Image 1 (tube, rainbow, N blue to C red):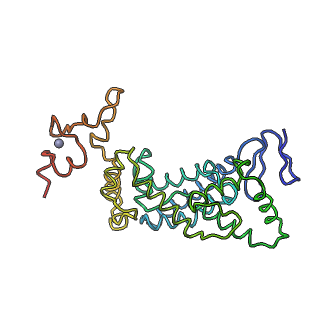
Image 2 (tube, rainbow, N blue to C red):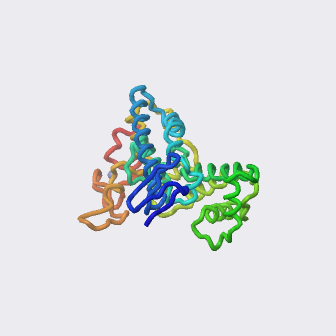
Image 3 (cartoon, rainbow, N blue to C red):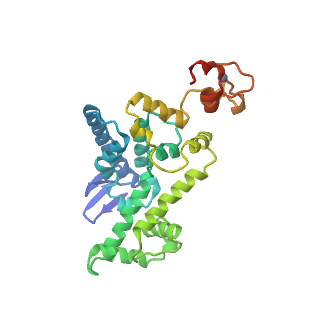
Length: 299
Ligand SMILES: [Zn+2]
C-alpha cells in the first residue's frame, strides 16, 4: 500500500517522511508524528531542567514559564491540524504532567487534578484549542483565492455529521460544547471560549469524587489557584515535603496500607501503628492533631 503525500512523495508500508517538520508514516496515525515531537520536547525539557539546576532556578512559577517558552512550542508544533484529536495530544499531556510531578516531588500515581491544580495549570489541550481557533480565524480572513481558505471552505461544505473524525467534525463538536452552537466559518470570541474551557476543567476538579486524596486536597486548596507556599518556601526539601503531604504521598498508613497480603484494605482498617490505636485511622488529621505519639513535639 502506498500513501501519497502532497502528490510528490509516495510512502510505502513501514516508511516515514518528514514534511514541514512533522513526521508522517505510511500506515500509522498522526500519533506517530506527535510521538516524534514529544521525543524532541523531552530533550529540550532535559536541557531546561539541567540549566535551571546549574543556575539555581527552583521557583516553580518561573520553571513553568520556562516550560511554556522552551518546551511547549515544540509540543504544539502543527497542533492546529492534529490538536483536534485528543488522542494525538495524549503523549504531550503526559510529558507536561511528568514535568510538574518531578518539580513537586510527588509520585507518578498522584492524581492529575492535584498536580495541575497545585500550580494552577490547565491541560495542554486547552492551549491546542486556542491555537486551532486562531488558525480558523486567520484562514477565513484570507483572500478567496488562497489555497488554505479554499480547502477549508470545501471541508466545511461537506456534511459534517457524515464525516466523523474529520477536522471540521471535531471543531464543530468543540464549539457546540462551549458555545451551545456550531459557529464554523464565522468569527467568535476566542478568549471567552478558552476561558469557558478552563472553567470546565476547574469544575470537573471540584466535582471529582472518585479520588479520596482529592477530597482532602480540596479542603486545603478550595480555589483553583497557584499554591503560594511553592514560591514562599525556599528550601527545596521542605517544599517537596509540603507538596507530598498535600497530595497524599506522605507515607502515612492511610496511604501505604491500601493493600495487605495482596488484597485491598479498607480505609477504616488502616489504623495508626505509632500509637497502636484500635479505631484511629492514621490519616492527615490524626497525624497532625490527634496522635499521642507526637504530642511531645506539638506546640
Ligand atoms: Zn496515632
